[in-house]
Length: 92
Image 1 (cartoon, rainbow, N blue to C red):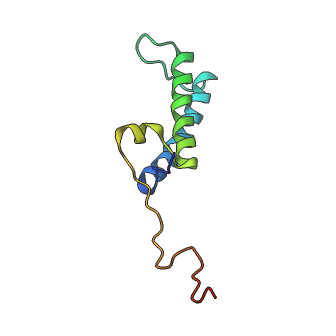
Image 2 (spheres, rainbow, N blue to C red; image 1 turned 135 degrees about the horizontal axis):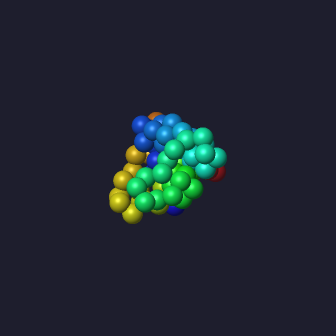
């Protein structure tokens, strides 16, 4: 799979991901109330942790399957004026 996460998308994932991971751990430990409606505290904490972990991993590897399915690509390759292959001027 090609890289498809970059720019501001990656920065947001790198900021929000660890925050959600820490919130999930704190919620599971009972230090932070995350229960929403009928969902119990432990289940909500695990969901928050997993979402944060997914955001963090996709930001680090710069590949997101959901972006690929939806057709989003925020990754910009570095433009280089020269080819990476060595140029042979006289092969004789």
